[in-house]
Length: 186
Ligand code: ADP
Image 1 (tube, rainbow, N blue to C red):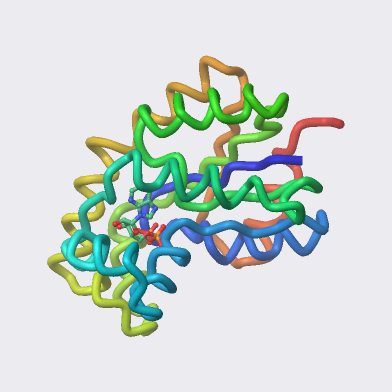
Image 2 (cartoon, rainbow, N blue to C red):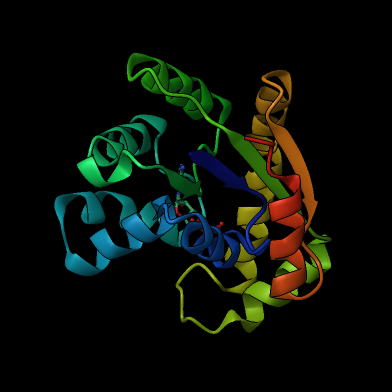
């Protein structure tokens, strides 16, 4: 089972992806977390992406696509995964389609979480994880980048018949139940 969890910054993708992964016994893959880990470990990749991420901008498509392709080639990803933070541009979505096709695989569901902007901003400011991109200015940039570059990804999966829209407001458990209800029948 391969699930994409999608939504603006602060929509709760990471929180919900973790629960969904546990529920189905699949892996949670977060491109944002992979980049933050690389930065903390001081790897080559980390050095390349640090400035971009701190600014709230997007890492170049090819860098992300290569990282995802390498990751999902791992044996443990065979049983499935929920991917959070990718694809974030239409170009990434097309590259993901092609990569999966080469592997004789496909996406089973695209779950899109929505919440009003003022709530997203409040959540990110309250998150308190000390992320360098969780300042008011960088949050504003990330929301703008989302609207301009990432939101069009929804249309891509709508055309593929995989798009499911889920209300991302309420308690963590309420949202989780909505996600389970939105999953396609097997
Ligand atoms: P959020 O959804 O709260 O913005 P993420 O952890 O998903 O947080 O992403 C943090 C940052 O990592 C993004 O602002 C971006 O710079 C980078 N990033 C993560 N995934 C991608 C991606 N698929 N393409 C480009 N940049 C990415």
